[in-house]
Length: 249
Image 1: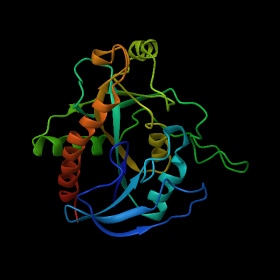
Image 2: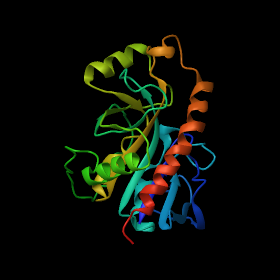
Image 3: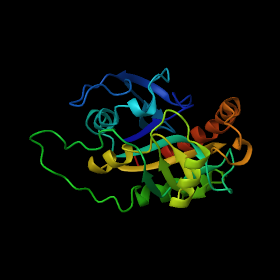
Image 4: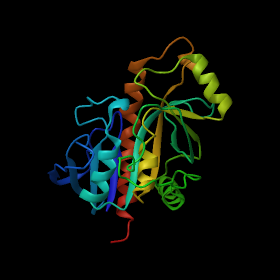
């Protein structure tokens, strides 16, 4: 089963043939919303809106543990594709660029980042050298090319706390640290997927220049972000449909 987690701008999959919605109870509380089961490209898919179907949950309040547990144990998902909007730090990723990142730097704080933190839980150390599943990344990139879409293969994703956007000085710091794009939801989602033994990869859409860059030099223009999302997320949905259609039965 393929799971798709939709981020800002992707609270539903318009091309998903919906069969049912299911509320999943988890040991970690409520997920962001019911799981939506359906078919995409003729193959079974489960969809979850990370911020809720009304986009009401800010990034630092998302119950990442419940979301990942629900997809793993409630939907029996084996692979997860995360779709997320990001700000561009690197100058060759202007708004409208599609990116499949390969690394993460975690700047978040206060988020519960493991399934194993109960009083009686045993300690688990997961290898996170390569935070995204290599095979899933490669197959996504191949599908992008097959669908005639340009995509950047590889970028360092900086996960910040949110919900406010960053200062120009903070973006300068992220750049010095080696970050190429910045978002607010990459962690602990990716780490929890690794603990749950789920193949996980991300498709990121650059929707704006990060603070202090390009036309964001003096401020972020939110109306421009929405315009980019409307145009480009339709193309992401098409690529996801291509990907699902090419999955083995």
